Length: 156
Image 1 (cartoon, one colour):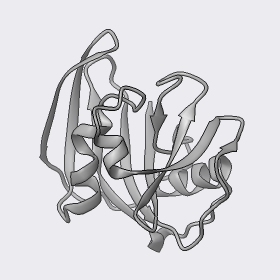
Image 2 (cartoon, one colour):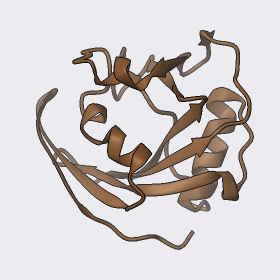
Image 3 (cartoon, helix red, strand yellow):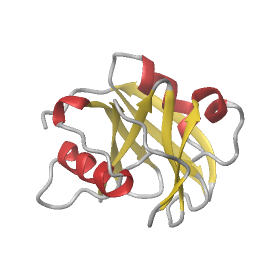
């Protein structure tokens, strides 16, 4: 199965969701979800941002930043960054969880409430112009390792 994961930025803060369902129940994470059979990854992330946060983005406002895989399945997700011109009123309870804006230092500050792999790649995703593919090794719910290698731009 393939998924999307987007990090929406508004004035230096990231819009995250505290998820109410698996994976990452109870953890803060980016927005996204499953790619439908008739969708490209960029179409899926645009749809998911609308469904989860009511945000309307175009293809030109969404930047592809790489791919994330993990050892527990053949699933993977495409990473995106979106600069938003509007800020939604948060905290906001949705059917997926609670939306709120968080500062990067809050995410990186040994925060056990954030999806465990995000602190290992978020700075590169946000600030590096290169595209990387990330691979996470988990043992149960414990993250053991995150590796990265140069990725390539997919044509969407």
